[in-house]
Length: 274
Image (cartoon, rainbow, N blue to C red; front, side):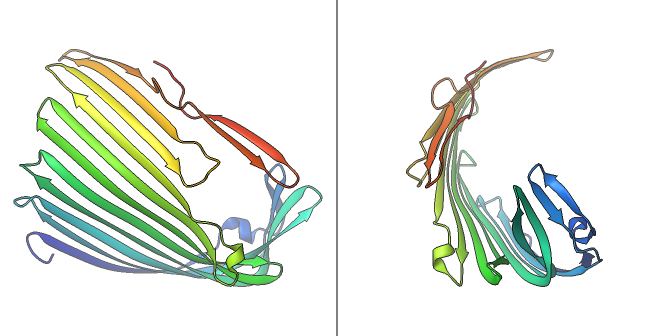
């Protein structure tokens, strides 16, 4: 502990562990109707090194709060896999070679409360980088998977019977091939926005929640949901009625057109129900 308002922690962990059982078994086995896994037939081990650092700050008097955490994981000796087709069966099997991977995670959140907590602003971010290897056309290719999320959250409680909460979130996804940029996937950006309004007069409570979701892919529609919840609480019993998706999207509709196939998917996202 650094002070009455600050705290920090550092940890390190080392493990030498057997790899997954599916890599050890000497026979092939089906993982699904058209997928098969072939093991090495021998015991093998992988090394794991993990280091993490965390920090916290909390000052209730000023209404300022902050926490952050980062970690790094290094794995050595995992079996390098290859894939092949035998008729209609997709077979995954170890090559006898080993691969190395690393993973970096970080998260941070800053919160500031105003007017004795009646109005609160919070900013949060999470990120992850994974470096891994894949065998493609008998060549080892290095990939990096990148995920990042940024969130803004607002909360306003002017009186004890009324509250408003809003949240906006942006998520980035990308899988980058370091040796060949043409094999990298494009960056996908997902957006999610939420607004919740609550009114609680006496023993009654009313809540209206709306969500809006969309991303940067042109062939994906915008999804909107709106729910209402009404309830009554007493010392002896509680009654509530919830109406989900009273207006907005209730289906996910997507059409994919390829060189040899046309695929049309319709998925029920959130049914309208009571």
